[in-house]
Image (tube, rainbow, N blue to C red; front, side, top):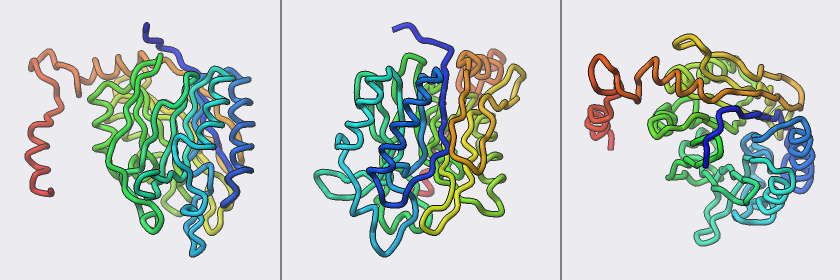
Length: 290
């Protein structure tokens, strides 16, 4: 399969109705088809888009969680097939064997289910309803390799993104539920810029918007990536705040290859004959923490 460089992305500011998976699935389907009609080849929805985010004593996520494959992922797979698009969306997933619930994101292609990522790092009250995932998700597409992490994974645990970058990911997907708070710009926008500079790849981020059960979400869905100058980061899809909507972005993924050639983090530095990245040293350091 020849690798394509140009990709039209859609990231969605999505307002999830708390606990109403039927209504949310209907709206996700509508917006996915709308984005496809605008030329999107890949559509990204936020973390817990199918369910809403906030934890409560009603244990909503445990009540509505679905297996993957399951009814919701099957419905989204049908949309991906009918529209000829790739699609990723957050949901509460139930493991069919153990019954454990995970904060997950499912990835579909026109050919069907590609994979399901279970969030590895859980902040605050997420651990009241979700178990910790164990396995990164790196997958092949017509546009090269892509990796996926969810929210907290992205902002405070750069090791996951470094792992994907080192394995050749040109695009990282960040379905997120980042609420409105005083340090939102610092945690969200600044950290995404840093992750681009660290890894030389593109990031597509889709956030919830509007009032959940207890939290208010500001949106800010965006597409960001390397520019033509070394360490330059560019908004290819400018953030959309405080309203539901679709952000479209056409990107040239060959810029990720160029960024890595100019800054030989993972590729060979011609002056030294080795990459600048030194995982052997880091692995020895990490042994002190395991």
